[in-house]
Amino acid sequence: MSDIKLIEVPKWGLSMDEGTVTEWLIDEGTPFSKGDLICEIETSKITNELEAPFDGALRRIVARPGATLPVGAVLAVSADAAVSDAEIEEFLTGIGADSVPASEPERSPGGQPTPAEPRVTPTPSAPAAQESARTPGTTAVPDSLRGQTKGDVFATPHSRRLADELSIDLGRVAGTGREGRISVADVHDAIRSAGGTVAEAPSPTRSGVPGRTSEDDSGIDATPVARRLAKSLGINLHDCRATGSRGRVCEADVREAERTFRLVPDPVAASTGGADTSQHTAPEFETIPFNSMRKAIGQRLQESKRNAPHFRLTVDLEIDNLLALRKEINATVPSVKLSVNDFVVKACAAALRKVPDVNVQFDEAAQSVLRFSTADISVAVALPSGLITPIVRGAESKSLAEISGEVHALVTKAKTGKLTPAEFQGGTFTISNLGMFGVREFDAIINPPQGAILAVGAGQHRPVVVDGQVVPRTVLTVTLSCDHRVIDGALGATFLQELRRFVESPALMLV
Image: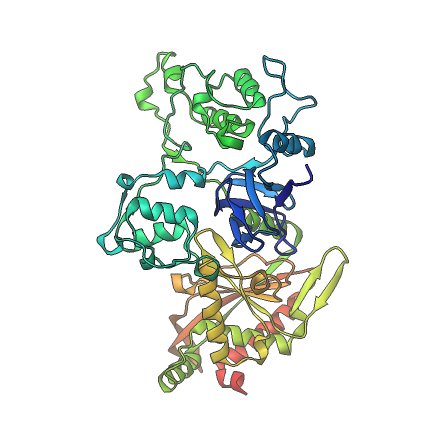
């Protein structure tokens, strides 16, 4: 037993509580060295590759792709060839990583303990391991990607197998993993970008009116707890997904099937009442499970709305002078392409320097205010999986060109999943800009533990009265949301006065 080692969910950053396995980069039975990349784990903010913490051989994958586990939970088992599968099973059972969630082990008809799934929380998403089983006929690959991979291409084993199946030259695929490693997702993205199509595996959660299966399910591989629960609920195991250990149906799969049938009535059962079901067909829907990022965003913002007493202040800013300066700089310095948002970041940093009591965080545990000497501006970036806020640190001491370059680099890293925790954790003030979508004005939820967030709308031509005359001006509406526990109304208004001064007289930011 001493030769058995565990690979566990790491803790990447102070706010990480759990992680979801998205892909195993090596197969069971594969030896590895310390530092080798062995799997991908999605956290609330990023997807990162786990490096092997020691030399070993992957003997048992405990957490299948799609499984969400807390920090420190068992991902896999490493052991040398001298250790038998029975010893590994006994070891996992002994530590509670492969046991029936009941007071006593479930017994099989022969009287022997029946192993159950590991105590992990599978998500309803289809196991990513099935991706490698897709055949070339299910995906349309453009001719521009076809060919044989030549040379040493840095790619995961699953993506290599998929590329071989689809006759794709990996040399034509851009990798977004650590150090440019190509993943299965990169192959799929390349196909779509080149005009091809990727046929997704049928999703058991996509349903209109699902019919129940009456076929004998005694041959379905399921855990004892799942089988007992299915019998009590009247659920056929053929109607359940199999996301448990070693592809078995687990308790969560049965409960998901039960919820589906409860939400969408069985058409056969409904028709026995004599009603005309053709006029009462349930609407078609798709169940989309939360990913780790979306779950974390929901929890944090719900806590912010519940705990932080928000108040909002809205002002209109005239930005014609700012636009003129931006045009002049961009025309004079070809290497610099400033955006309006770059000016807003710089103006907020300058205003925070003038009104430092807004540049704060609230320490709820200590019931104290943390006031910062540098303006670390979080810039909200929308991603398909959720929202992330990379940070421009010390923005008050950086030039507009430096801010522009840094924001561009951070946004690029955010969209390719390459941000490090240090690049998005922290921040003293947040800017959320929806102006590019034509939104005139909105208010945003404070990003805890920060004390304020600025919502920026679109610059629009509006009539403005100047000296009794109506004149056209380009106006930007901004709304400051403040935590009333640390920022009072007069303080927030003072900050907006300073912000107006820098935005409407942008040359002051250059001093």
